[in-house]
Length: 246
Image 1 (spheres, rainbow, N blue to C red):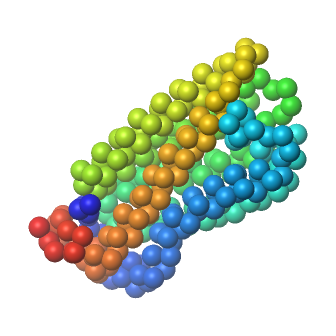
Image 2 (image 1 turned 120 degrees about the vertical axis):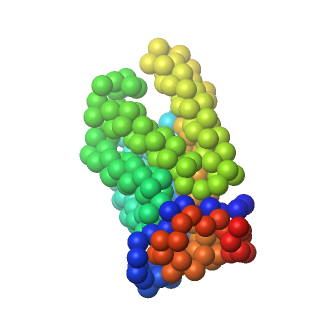
């Protein structure tokens, strides 16, 4: 994939040039954090919640007030945020004056901050899914909007290949969100919703994959671009994977 660096950063040897390894470590968290989250939900939680069916029951139930997994899972999910938030800070630093990339980082930082605020307001027993609670407002309205906006902003940060990938990611997220909404409506109506868990996991999986792809794209850019180049106002160079300007 050809990497396009838009709008290099400010004058002088900035953070990227002085601490290139620190920046790479921050960006690497974008690959490690998604793997960690999948392990938390699908390995740790699965072993702690007898009778929980990941195909038909939603992910958010794992942190519900009545779930036996909540005491263990909440600290592990807070640790995920402690991994992913530094990644978004790394994205901000790697972006330089790339406004689209910095907007993506800002929106995703807001997304994760709201996620942390949602932990004190879990699902409760016998609550109607989609009820007008703080939990639902945060996870059902605010965070999805920030997530979609962040992915949309990333489409303008790189070349055509990543733009297409970001657009396809948005389409997939909208489709799985609609499917999740249908399954939730069936639960509220007292009808079976056999694919609720799968739909929600697919939604999370698509987002995690986008995070990892963005991290790998930026790590590749760090290998092919001298960090000092990102701090010189020399226009908008186009770089091949080998670093040769076009």
